[in-house]
Amino acid sequence: MEENTNYFEVNKDTWNQKVGIHAQSVMYKMDAFKSGETSLMPYELKALGDVKGKSLLHLQCHFGQDTLSWSRMGAKVVGVDLSDEGVKLAKQLNDELKLDADFVCCNVLDTTEHIKDTFDIVFTSYGVIGWLPDLKPWAKMIAERLKVGGTFYIVEFHPILWMFDYIDDEVKMKYHYSRKEVIYEEYEGTYANQASKMVSKEYGWNHGLSEVVNSLIEAGLQIEYLNEYDESPYDVFPDLIKLDNGMYKMKDQLFPMIFKGDENIVL
Image 1: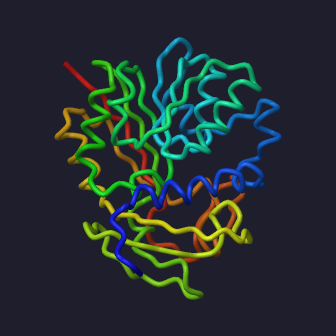
Image 2: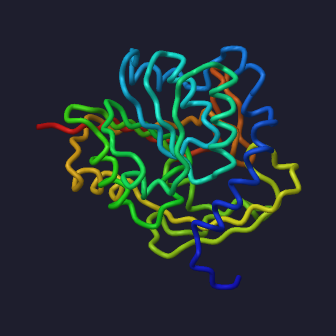
Image 3: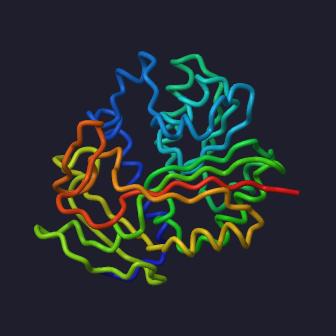
């Protein structure tokens, strides 16, 4: 691997390539979504409740399905993503579905440079924090964009999952639980279509739960809860077993797959 410090540009190019492939994949169920099916999970809907009339900022929104699902429920939403192709498709879907969401293309760490409003809810989900080298500026930005009394909700894959190398034929533990050094991976395919011939080139970082929690506390957020769960809603890791409830687990799994947290700004 050649040294490349332009991490975000490489990742942006990869995500631009993913957009079209993901939009046509079985995983993202585009036809069902356009017909009115929500892309949000039941526990996300339960956690945030009635969002009608509330302002909501969705960080790292990909091509906006979750953002637009919140918009359908009556929230005034803004989605942010690094990928200009993702934002382009999100805007097209917004127009096609006659919704009123806004989308901004920028590095999530630069959100405050592009968006000055504050929000009742800041939302982020699944495979987001691993693209960031340092969570302190991320948490600071979240605190800046939340109204006093507002809620930050995160649901994310558990850090233990990123300790493994999934590229080789045999899955093996390879990376430290919380790692400051960048991890580079290059492989054919993408999580929503592993048969795709696109080459994913990705720079990422591992962040343990203590780093997530402490970054948010340091930024001034109050933690309401942090829970860990054994099941994943997505079949995006090797050899997962689908359960009767539609969720997924690994065979002989000994660790959680996702965590969820609810934090807010208090006076």
